[in-house]
Image (tube, rainbow, N blue to C red; front, side, top):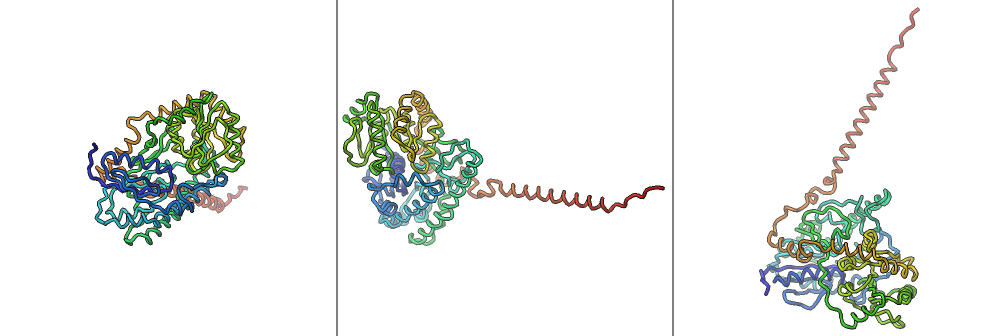
Length: 506
């Protein structure tokens, strides 16, 4: 029996991403088991459960991909050819399309037509794709806000929570840089951070504001950029075991790993197949956005040739449709209980998505990474630096490269030893990450009007908070001193030329 305090929580889980849903729903279900009443507005929904009521934003996936969530797929080859600048622009464009889909959905009309006196004690919103529906704050009389994201630490965090970004040693998510960047890399990395922030501020936020003005019935809603800055705390999917260290404001709480549960027993036939591998088994999954069955015939043959060559290992392959002429050592499934399989395998061939990377580290399984897009490249780079993975470039991949890389990882004990040490570090905490997240959410419910942890940067702005004005003033003073010294020297030289020459005595 759980005690119910009657608190009503509105969850705006609006980003169209199965991975984000996996992460966000763990928070929601944990709160529901404690007796809180949650209304979840989301593009990914489940059947209503005790204390959980879902409102479906049914148009988001169709607006985003012109497809359903089940049939959605990305052009794998195209993704690998996108530059850092292009992916930054593309992501903000996709975020805007998600917002358009949210406002088009019947689910938006449902939540907007809730009575204005409906009591909302807290809003939890996934801030990744922008403050699209934060106008609901105004409708429900400005309850406190908890921002969440499975994405990690985004480039625009300082625009919401204050604090600072340090591009000199924190790589932008779209790059494969590490903390030891050359001058040219630091210059480009700094540009990416500034560019990312500008695109979000002057394109995405302005477009969201325009949508809010036209779609909400109440025309007195404040600017969405100001609404998101009212966030009380932010829960981030980061941890120093895998993420590059960087300073965070005190109300930004790292809770990486909250989605990882104790492994469940595997189905008997699946476990039997895994245990039947002569030298063990290997899990292969390219994530939720990249479908293996949409790979070109050339790449499919690369994987099949790899599996055939490594016949001493069994392969469990996440493959979304039927496939014929499979080698005997390969089992394909459209869906796999990844977190439950990982404790039983020797290695993990992965796209290096953040949740998959965290699960692999948590279970102590080394990786062969094949990144495609966005933060996957940075995740892969960090895993390689940690000595727990080897990277394969999808653009230049061959069956031989893949075979050699898999052999290197599974046959060298150093990868397993290092990832198991990192696993201990990742899991060694005074409180489980999900419990930590719930404690902070309940803290906000206990102290809804408390903002003593807010960063002063929110009010100062980046110009003052980075002391750019001081720097410019110092440069101005130095310039004045230089000008004054030059004038003094000119005057002295001029006076010297005017002095009368002494006459020679006879």
